[in-house]
Image (cartoon, rainbow, N blue to C red; front, side):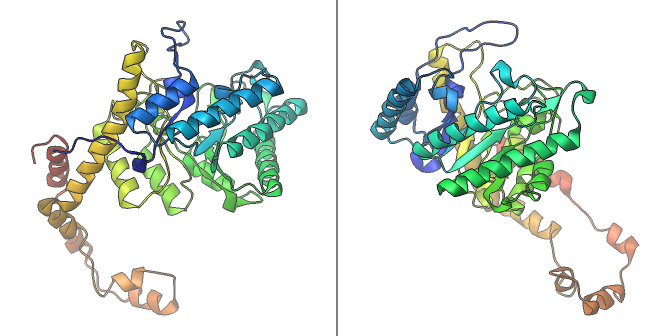
Length: 389
């Protein structure tokens, strides 16, 4: 039996805001004193994590002086060196300060939009200084409650202008940095622009430098709206745009819970991990989650350990699935190809293919009668996950 102890080769990362969450919610104040960023680095390294990610103000307070900023960053860089952790991703907090109450890049006020760009450029500089190769944009305030307050086409134009400006800035600075746009349907705004992975992919195609921009889908964000997160990740992989991923737990239809990865739907998490592993995803496995409000600091570290352990267990289950002779035989039966037809369906259109397909003798009733033993397959998956195979 595997011990499921993570190593840095697993590329597990946590945000400073995750273990640093003090347990505050809209109905209650903090319940624990979180570790400092440097304390967190040492503990995560001890647990086998690969790295940490951060918003600018997770590390440097919003109103820090330049001297304070330099001291904080120098101490953090030394802690990274001491622990062997890395910073694969960075982002900007464009949602907490009241200045962003009606958006950052999509604010109606040009001064707010300029301030958002200014803050982001400085945060990009910080991220690159710490070694980040991916920069995430979550537009948490980029939306509306009052539809009449913003023209949605204009808002998207503002958002496009901001991303185009920032990709230009990165290119001008010669930074080796890619952007990842993070979708969410709602919360904290009533409606957030570009709410799904598909809408983000469509938007990316309109940018000046689309090759620099991908997506950062989050499990909880899709699950809130009862979408299939694994399918969203598959679309991003197929487009070559899965630049980063946020893993956590979530019950459909609830508020954004950011639960421990694997706390809820084990089967969904299994197929997600299987997809990432089977398709050779090489990026970080980032846990954008929080320990429960009932947790003390010791339980926070159990939460972090649990996120990583769950992923490794599901990775092993994916290996077992791929090696299970009964499951694989059933999949081979279900996915049996046709030596004549498969070449006609593969690749691009041609007049010859069209003529061949039009001339095929296909019996719809015979095709409809083909057995599809999906019940048996699903039960085999259940048995595998519950450990009775």
